[in-house]
Length: 441
Image 1 (cartoon, rainbow, N blue to C red):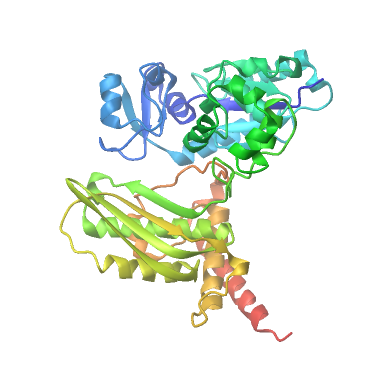
Image 2 (image 1 turned 135 degrees about the horizontal axis):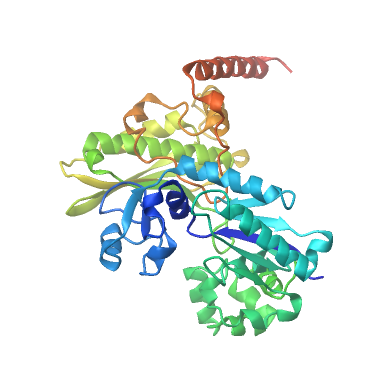
């Protein structure tokens, strides 16, 4: 019994949810976009649209050329989160404790007799059927079953849509030889180039390569681990929250956004920049890191982009970062129409290893941001925010993280009374924290 993991991948998830919710879209090519603008790109494409070559990242104008009948619809992240939790509940009916790797991927550990091939296949089909019953028109999923998480995820990608693929130990590694290197999770463009430099161009060559060669190609032990996963060993995957595609730690945190037509003016673009910076600062604090530099970029219609950056004193506080952003924006001189904006925090170090700004009011600022983060983490982004970003609240909307899915909102979280109560509790929490810090040891 070599089967240990069952991996569920929702096919064209965002577009499929739109088709379930809107009967007129069923069976038709659909592209999901962050904003209704021809200059943006598709963040998801339905199975029907993919047959015409439309995929994630395809510009809207190109999608219309590839597929003249495509329907372009704005994304509804809150709806996708709701369906995500419905799918988790559906999987729970058949196996305990499914682990969500992202909004559209779940991994399940096989236990006991579930590890027998026939039982594992029956379980996978039962989960697929349960998911398909969640809405009219059905949601399609692909399931991979294998000795480890890495191979189960790989198997789920081998037949789409609506596939169910089993990779047993006896099938390895020959069953992988037909794949391309970039089909394997963890091999992005940079790693692909490095492998080519070492004479590895196919998955077969990768599987047969000496472990020592892969250690050199990966510049560390991750090459040896990758080789072991390919051959069925159970080894934890790199932490996707703090690592990039090659397993290195994040060196930056940032957000960018293509502006909707009504936001293509300097005042609105600046408000969107402030909102993006607040989102980046919240992520930075969740990683328990501080930034040493802030970089800002504005792309314009028919003109060169504007960029600026400044040094920071090991900052993670939203108010200090907003002040730094204001200083950068004050140096800009233009009357052009902005098209897209972005902010990036770089030179990251662990908060515990930083002395910070010795003259800043760090503790008072941190108490406020800590309370705000707790509220937004528990009840959803932008439930409480700085007023300078208010104009942009309808821009740069909620995005679906690849490794953290918000809780589904409860019915009692929609009234003004509910939020007044939450804010009163936050005030009490902040005051108690302040008293605790002032108490002598």
